Length: 79
Image (cartoon, rainbow, N blue to C red; front, top):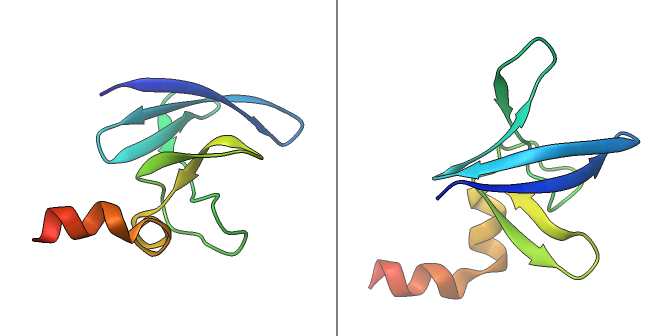
């Protein structure tokens, strides 16, 4: 799945691209970097997907935060 979304960051808009297991953003000079998890302010892990929140819409989230916030999504896969 290749999904693009706009995200307001540092006073401007950044286009994030979600691909399987990664959320990427374009860097100056070309290329892409992994977006950081933006679910919790102190988390510095790379985002692996996005989840909807009423305040920020689609928000990049890492696997650790995702497992903590949405354990029901993992219980089905682990059984």
